Image (cartoon, rainbow, N blue to C red; front, top):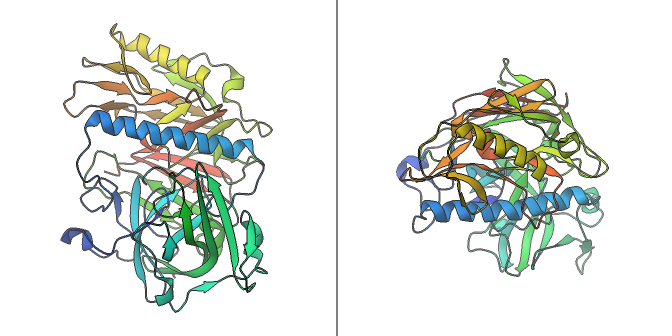
Length: 432
């Protein structure tokens, strides 16, 4: 059996029965899964009419803000990561890949989320779900889990159906609720089959912030993909995300220790007992150009008691820093750009309407520095008339102690999660 696979980033389950153009129908071969951006020609989730650049940026910022609220709520609580955790999923996935679920297989698109363990799929008969669902009645390997199953103790608010034969869980997030049956079926990724994968089969959703589809996480909790495929992939994976402006690209997620890069820098992975699924790293400083900016140590220190620190997250698009850290970075960035007229766009407060030469920014972690080139730092309007520093401080209404290294800052890097050795590796790699 193959010990590694390639596929996307952020894991929401989405169906792709139709609507792709011929080149998108190319089958995945061996252990390679094609990765599509949600706005690529191969994605059924691209907007029906193209958004303006400004609309796109503002929408992304709003989605990031919802995610920051979600991540901040995770570290503020001590609850176990549930299936279908309480995330306001009002956003689309960023990167998606094909997978097959059930017997015979039903093709789904999956997005990957490193900060979740959750797995759930909208199933046939679900009230309030989208029109695209998994038809569990047609799968000969599908089964519901009973209330005595050990997995039933790992979900939030478990209960039994009237017959006592099915474990049900209920979740509330925002103004929405979901109800799902705890279930198992075969997940096939490229040529690798994972039998009896545990997930929630959605039966009902209500409210205005109902997530449009499902979720499969790459966190470290008991029901994550890593935990359920430990023998196959040995809790090791890496991904390389192409630039989100690339319509055609071949990014990858590689599961398992085989084929991972040898020349790569590492920093220790830290574990927060409040939220052991999240991938914390120790950010010890930030350099703008050749200057290490003045940040109060407490603003970036890892603190398991409060949940403070820095995480690597695939679901946030633009890096968010706690206010003292962001202000220090922003002020030095502005000083080095030397353009007096600074404007703003939504949550970005450092934008320019003239061409600029931007300094590099280096994230300094324990035993590892990561220097970001301009492609990972700046966003440009379609016409090139506006350029913004693609970072921000935590939103005003989020009492966040988290620094979040987001997917734009990770693009064109191989990010390696080596959980058995408690380390995270980063190497420059052109994914586009």
